[in-house]
Image 1: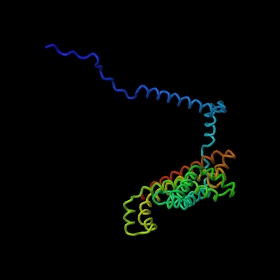
Image 2: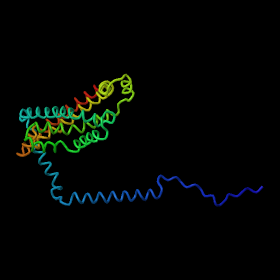
Image 3: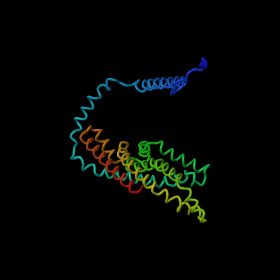
Image 4: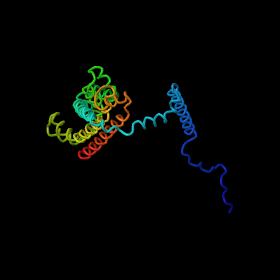
Length: 275
């Protein structure tokens, strides 16, 4: 019996490829466009750069570093009161941010807002507006309005904190368990009672965690607001930089670093205990 011959029209299967030729070509053009964009951005950023100063930067950095060491420990007592101002600025600013952010968060959450067409967009606009302006810019504007001092720093920290606290809090409100809300509603509770007994208990741990986390961030931000006249350690840092007192600058940086590390430790412990 003559065996059947294999048809010459049947071709072997093509090997598997991760991308089609068209996809590889598009990816290649994408990387080419990204490289061209990088080169153009680099030219725009460096068109006014004086490269002599760039090449001389390591020498200048080593010179300033030698002047900054050792730190002037005798300057530490003069930093205690500015440090206290910095801590008060961060704490009071966080409290102000919480007071302003809580109603904004409940207005921005879909499940608690009384008006999804008017109040919710307005609350979201407040949150976005607060988050889009840095606390240093807020402090600069408020120092021009209120004058230099800790009050401008407190309000700047508070206005900046509204967006952060409000965003995280309204997301936590929207993620509450609907079954608990339905259970309380089924008892004939009013809207205020549903809010008090079904939503707030679920949100409370997240609220305290967000507040402590924001306080930790505000410690860092309030330490530099004195650069624009808002008081605290930043004011001492600015005055020391103006007179080129580099050992004092080192001492201020050490105090700021120690304060930030301590606030980070306290924040982590408190959030671990709450959450």
